[in-house]
Length: 340
Ligand code: PLP
Ligand code: COI
Image (cartoon, rainbow, N blue to C red):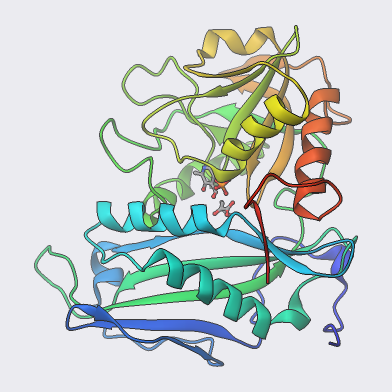
């Protein structure tokens, strides 16, 4: 199959419409059979639940071309499960997990010409989402929904790829205690927009959000979980009820322990501890692992010994092992890699 004529190695993290998208409609209490369509635009009533009360949840995963030329997805079953958990919290009818996986498979297959070639550094980003589509004016859940999947080829999330980034401790909170920080809902990102625009204006790449109750613990950034390496080589990652349970982070915990033999600590991480870590990174589907060189907390600079030029040595091993598994260079644990 002939690939599209794109400059794969120079893609940024942006949207471009591809040939097909998937849609299934929910009406009268059930999801229809679903289909691939070609129109990238959606026409909805002006009063649709998604427009008025942000009733929408989403997922993010990637399709990769492996070294031997297959197209694969990484742990789509966990995205299917998490979308159901997100939907439940916003009174959205869940999309069945087995159908989610089949729909991902179908839409990636149909867009195979858009899956970047092996070695290009790019991937096909897959964005499943569900939204309330009928009109609601009183505050209540919609009765009609669309489950959709769009795909778009992407390059690195942070400009500069593997160069360490600088982030700041945000004065804004991302999630409330007992709120929605643990689900993947558009509303969590809407409220982060002001903070990210301000962070960029001040010369930072991202925001580090603190736990909203005590503002003493590290939570996550706007779009990724944290990983830290201690000076004695342990893998540490924050535990909190108000962060997104990142599939990349959960996978890295296994990679760290089982592939690299590191001690893994999944626990509360205090802001005061940051100065003692040797390496820091952000992990997520879009971010993969993006090294953090510096964290600024109201003028106080925390500079990790790994520096601003390259990834720390253990972060690099984690990155190479994870991407090796995803791209088929390293044997994956059972069930992690789904061939499309
Ligand atoms: N945290 C937030 C807020 C995110 O938006 C994402 C992106 O999906 C992640 C963490 C990373 O999660 P995952 O590794 O499942 O992509
Ligand atoms: C992802 O990593 O898939 C996300 O949804 C994060 C987003 C900030 C692009």
